[in-house]
Image 1 (cartoon, rainbow, N blue to C red):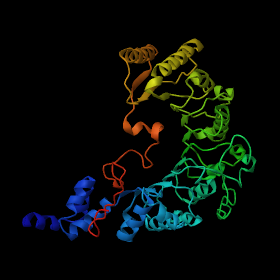
Image 2 (image 1 turned 135 degrees about the horizontal axis):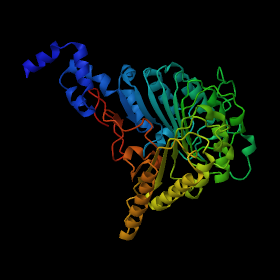
Image 3 (image 1 turned 180 degrees about the vertical axis):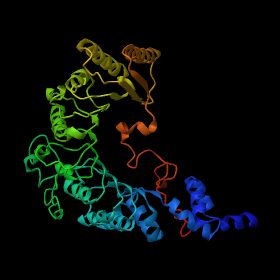
Image 4 (image 1 turned 45 degrees about the vertical axis):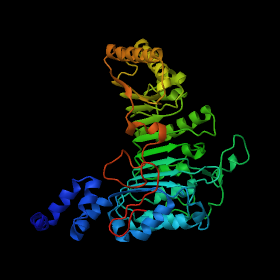
Length: 452
């Protein structure tokens, strides 16, 4: 053992780091206990990807982990929601969440991916650290509390996004409109929650006081935008000067509004950013026929179309017909097990329309896929046979038209349409999580403290 230890310590630092980089997180933790020198070599790998599952865990992390270790964090998944027994402590310290988030972000200057799951809005001081996050390219902000009681202000979110120097991908979920930008929604039906008291958020050096959601399109570095469960009825989507070149657009619907209203909002945003978009995820139907003509469609570069499981199946054919002006090459449709037969039938109807319209109708289409999410419910043999027959007919139709096709169960990482994709993307083995599989808060504090 002494010989092995001696051999290890004679290796150059670069070789040691390369060896540690090839270990998974559990192996790295075990290896770090060899001695103090080895632990020091392992620290960058241990803290490369960190997940903190509640406000109290964040506070304990800041109390026990040397602040210099935050410099090694490149991926951070952070939640400010109180833990199950933490409500009282948080209630007496209203600024605790803001101060804790500020402290970890200002120390984590090498962040590349960040997921902020906020329990409502934080203080405006959390905006400041984003100025210094020069490497941050992927940002997720979602409200993990009830919108009616703890809304997350669009002004705060837009200011954070616009302050991030190199932001390329932005994922927003359950963001609440500000009364400053949406006074027309106050005291009218349907009820849409509004944020009050967010007028203290300072003007942005480029956007000024115009911190409404459409101003996101003025972020020049932005390439991918996802907005879910958020009211998109702001008329400024059509007038804001677009400075970004979006490549991927993913728009959900607002559950406070009707399907027709959500569809109009989606079409409006598609028209504003369409010229550069090559991948789009659709939740609502498209009724505007302007998208059907190649010469005038707002989506001249659209290559990949994804249809969510919340899309009305009866609108598949009409929507696809209205999007015929785009050079779509790949169509993927996501659905639940109960909808497999209806989805396959709708896609068959679309393919029949393609045959009827002739070779110029979707002439670039090369692939149709259906991913099915399991619901773990028992079904009869007749139901199973019906589903298998439906998928078989669809795939045979695709083969006849020389289209590639796959119909199968969605992998766990691709079920983002059900529970929301992981804020930091697909799961990674080297992720230092501070929440265990049973949702019981844990903190792994190497050397200096025990597990909490």
